[in-house]
Length: 141
Image (cartoon, rainbow, N blue to C red; front, side, top):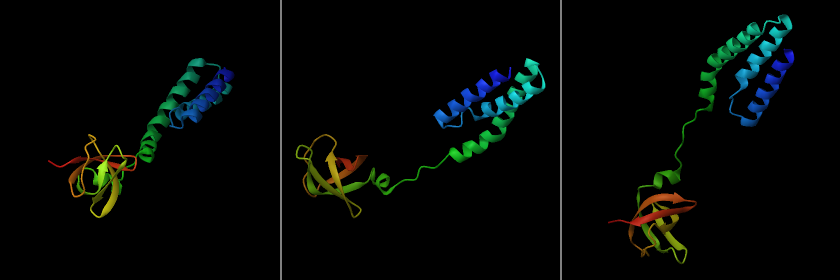
């Protein structure tokens, strides 16, 4: 029976290594304890019980810590703050010619119109989204 627990350890360790998501580390620990138990007793039910109990205990004890370590807050960047704002066209926006610039609160951005409309200098536009390094804009109504 020790060989079976060794196989479980190797398999779950490989799964853990491949995923890097802390998915099967608890099974590795449980299988190690079951392996040690298999050296003490031949009773398969005791070994399986040790495996299950240790796996559950380590999962319950460490999961909140792991979850806390993996959680993060998304921090808005300056570019995210531009979405929804109004901007002034400072260089004619013409998607066919691949040109266009807008001024958003003092920052100059390359821009494209959402619907392909040519927008003249001085036009007020609303920023809809960002694609790459260009703002996608639409003429204000």
